[in-house]
Amino acid sequence: MSKPLVLCSYLDRSAGRWNGVTDFFVNIFEKRFKIIWMDDFEQDVAKYAKDVVAIASFIKRPPVTEELIKKLPNLKIVANIGVGYNHLDVPMIRSFGVKVSNTPLVLDDATSDLGMALLLNAGRQLHSNITLLRSPETTQIDTNYMTNDVSGTTIGILGMGRIGYKVAQRAKAFNMKILYHNRSRRDEGEEANIGAQYYSNLNEMLPHCDYVMVTLPLTAETQKIMGSAQFKLMKSTAILVNISRGGTVDQDALVHALTHGEIQFAALDVTEPEPLPRDHKLLSLENVIITPHMGSGTLNTRIAMAQKAFDNVVAAVDGTALPSEVFK
Ligand SMILES: O=CC(=O)O
Image (cartoon, rainbow, N blue to C red):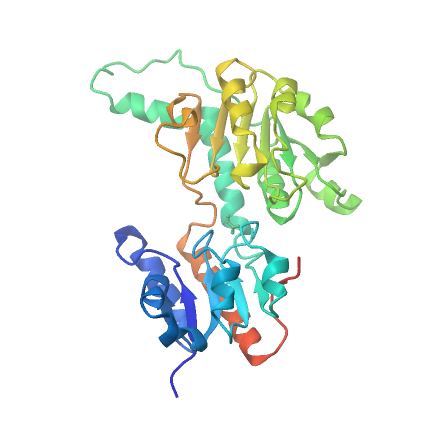
């Protein structure tokens, strides 16, 4: 009997730098299933559709539309390879009796490491100084070039879920004062462990922060939570770091804030859309650095994410409890 199919457009097979990632993803899944790539599937939907038991979705690929689900009579699960699933219409998918899962926990360290890397880079202005030193015009070291302190400064963490908490642990090691805003307050013991101070009101926290790091999931409530009013409340020297989703920041307001001295700098791992169109203003500003949504992008993390997605697919196919099911 042929193996059940997992429909996937995880990564472009022709994209050289991703080949290693694709290999381990395929290796894990092909222990039990066969990967059917979206482009092959579309060539002959009638041939493959009834054998597809799972869609493995990485960021927004493949788009999981109602039209696609209707073509797959034996679909058991949409397994998101990632923790954030704002791109999936969970109620729609579940209305077909299809389960949804994600890959929490295994990417918390890598993502919070990247948050700190962006914070340190932005604070100490590594990128611009590296570029400066490479320039043939640089013949002398400019010892007067000042950057921002990190140790002893104040960070405001927006969202204190698992990733926010890991960011706080790292910030504590840098002797930073830690403020946070979250829908619900962490219990006293957890706050004490990281020495964090809770603000139920985001706007009251912002004026105190040298760094603001966004780690929130994107939901209707968090859409553009950092907008014009928020930037105006921040210190003019403050630095924004976003490792969550581009949609949590009002990008027009951010451009305004960066070009009118409302804040000093932004370091973004996420934007809306991704990538930004080449002529987007954010790409041309000198007080912005943007990385390509690479929070979970380490080999071990991606292997762990693929493994978790695989475990979810196996559970859905076998009819057992999913390791990490998403219900809404
Ligand atoms: O952004 C990455 C994820 O949601 O896992």
